[in-house]
Length: 352
Image (cartoon, rainbow, N blue to C red; front, side, top):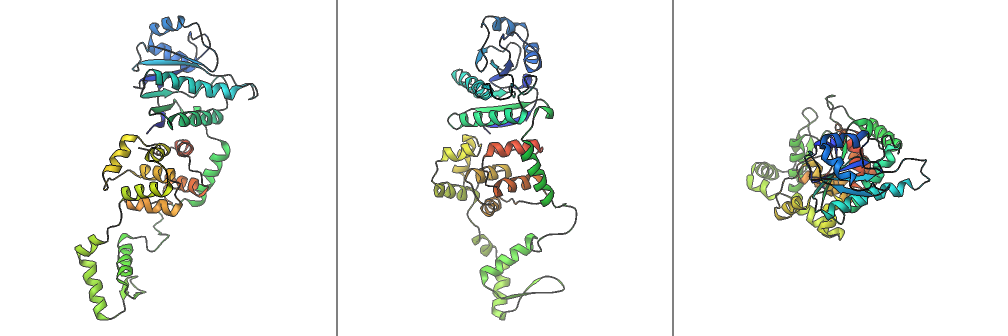
């Protein structure tokens, strides 16, 4: 997917460029800066000495020395002085300038740390929001895969209110999958299948109090038709609904957006979208289905319908599913914000 949040050591990222959280001298320092210089070897410092430093909010590019990438982009983030000294604008400029330099070098993959969120004191949740917003804005008009690299969980934080709201929503909706109690007595696949067959055949039924079975109570001819329909492979095959791919393309047309707008808002790679468009029986992953539902701003019921067409469902025994429900019910369809929350709760991210 175009924007990914990963937990890793940025010096080990095999990408076209990594971005260094540098200081104005560009001569190395502590934290991420020191780690990158140590891993790159002395040749990186030699190149940096020739650059003449760098202003806060700007960036410069060098080779990568011994690192597994091609380039190192050195960006200087602002120190947090309370938020009233242009820190936000400078931080946004760090990301924009770095992305522009990567684009100039025709980089296809770039890895960023979270600028200024360490010893420079920028509040972690605010630093993360700026990173996500600035990078996602860039990706709407550019084809590039960008990683936000988190070394450990202490370096990552979403807003306290959002975290608390999601935690409360999970607590209110989580169903222990081992309770043995089904919240819906029609949840079994066979029961749902029988009910669908009966509905389509327009057969009057009753429910057996002892076995909970569906019993046709209409004429014998109708009973025979029910039995024949249920057992007929030909009949079953005729009930096949539109596929996930067909529903996706139909919804894109109904929403009046372009294919590119859809897959970019879904955080989906263009090549994957092409596969889905060309194969009406394409079998996507569950996060991919949900990513498209988010991009199309589908309601919860429409999202469940799209999932069903791909062979999936939402469950209250799954925290990932509950978090998705939370965002849909609150009409927040920003896939990048959703991924922030999913990462904070150690869940799979949306996209390819």
